[in-house]
Amino acid sequence: MAKLLKLLGIGLELTIAILVARPGWCLPPPEDLPEEVLRTEIIIEARSPLDGKPMNPAEYAQLQDAIAQRSTSPGLDPQIRELIFLLQLSDLFRTILPF
Image (cartoon, one colour):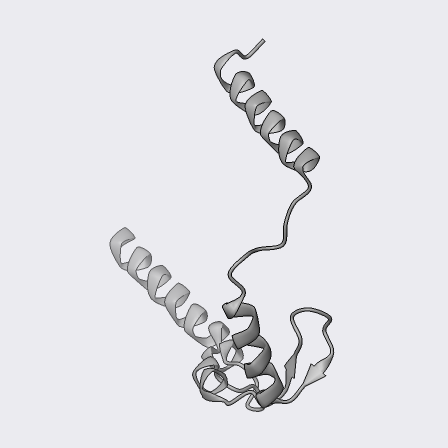
């Protein structure tokens, strides 16, 4: 008799869980576009990575080419380079000598 009540209890719990879960509530709203569709959209607006101004695709492509063709990166002040080196050295010493 105890086994029968236990099985009825489990069956009742499952039935309630199925009725309460409502699988339709977990779905996104119908107006929400799937990520797969958004990934295939062609973006025709662009913004300059330098100043954030709107650009058309041709100007954006030219700017990307100009940035890619730069052979040198902007120079860094020697004092700042030295400071970065000293900070890295200090960090190394803190790792080796914890006191």
